[in-house]
Image 1 (cartoon, rainbow, N blue to C red):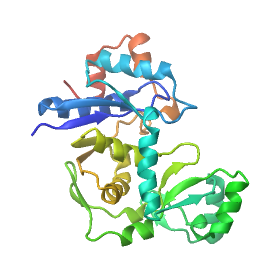
Image 2 (image 1 turned 60 degrees about the vertical axis):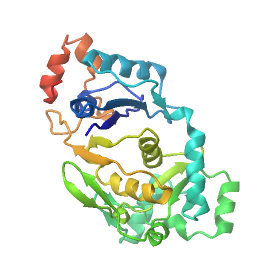
Image 3 (image 1 turned 180 degrees about the horizontal axis):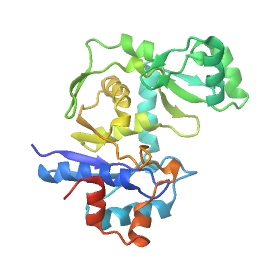
Image 4 (image 1 turned 120 degrees about the vertical axis):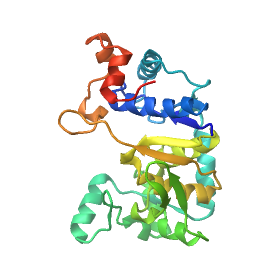
Length: 282
């Protein structure tokens, strides 16, 4: 069966080998099935996303030999769409404002000594869920930054049956989104977060096979819940392995991984060299 896959980078830096693996993996899955490969820009972070990085993504992917459907969807051009979906969740009383900074959360966990624990560490202890409407209003009027979190307990009460998804690498999966806790779905200044926008975009763009790194496996539990709450289609998933550097750490922008631009322009690598390095061939 022909599949529709996507590669959805954030233009906050140049692509590295981890990106190359992910893009090649999705592209190969689409083309071998006679399907489509879609490119999407997750560019809602206006402080860090730049046109130079976006153009660099196009250049790197073209150099690798990849082509994609046009036009490229840019999330920054669809913020009203995400806001509308967020309003649907708010109408179900599934959102609450959270005023906690990362530091606040760490301190609350330290004080309690018994914060909820998920597969990736401590999860949000629900501090702001306990605030009264008056307390929330006071903080908003005071100008304290806040995010909108999904009230996981309330959301789970709306489910009539257990949720599942098909993972082509791991087999049928039962969704247990409670292990992630009250996920952030938007912020005051931006009407979406990764969890919300990626779930909506995959539905709107007709993605039938979501391919992404295994580091995002637990996020899929939340995405499956959002699909149910918002009446969205459920694609297949394949959480592929991560490409690690010589120190055994995954390639990432934050650790200044060697970029494809550097490999191409400075080290004079070829697209074939990159495929040899990541182990995927077109």
